[in-house]
Length: 310
Image (cartoon, rainbow, N blue to C red; front, side, top):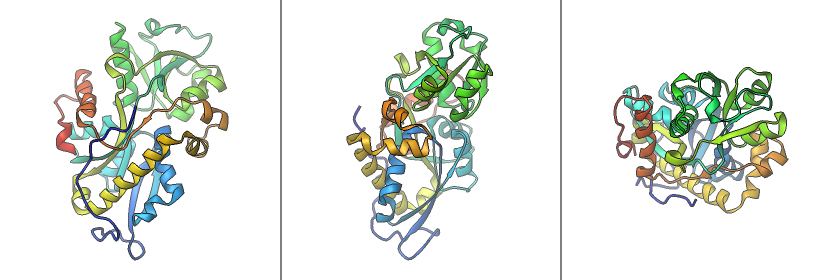
């Protein structure tokens, strides 16, 4: 899938970023961003490694969050300026009116077999129809993890309301699945491939099929107040992510070492893992599918208009 070509914002400005009160050295703007150890952040790390942010006058200070909701919470509290996360916590905050959030860049969508539910040999779960009442691992409730899983279960005619959800970070999941702490687990790549190679995990089903095929999964957000007061910095961030995403899509070999370093997988796993689809531009109709699906499954109780968040 190619990068979706709809601009996120029509903000202008380059060179010295003079609209920030987070000034670092002369001519630079410090931007604090919350990230996670996920595969779709490879373009971000590529930009960091190659100095693309510095070239746009940005000094990036990143911190790691354990989940998308935690990342968004750090942004809402003012701990960071920009949050990476799955789209679901952005739309939850908007629906609950807890924060006025703007989506400033896309990050990824679900490619074939890049978001899977897996189990291990010997488990009582042999197929999707065995999941009712079982313990299923997700990173957090109200995220893309359980949304994709529930949609796939509903499409297959399986009772998704009886699932016992157990929350844990992706890196911890394979070992806990092997220990029997859960019966099955939702994983994204590279953790799917890692679980297969390290604990003999058995894929049960691809969650990005049917209604969720190619579903946008994650992006970057900031508060409306930050966007209004730091427009040039936001525009510079977008230009960097456009550049790095285009480069990552063109040459996989440039990002495989970054998966080893930041997703903490082996070079063999980095080479064989199925990638999510990297994106940087926001396609409003496509992303609108996410809050619509969230409303269908009771994550939110009102319609969220994505266009109003751009």
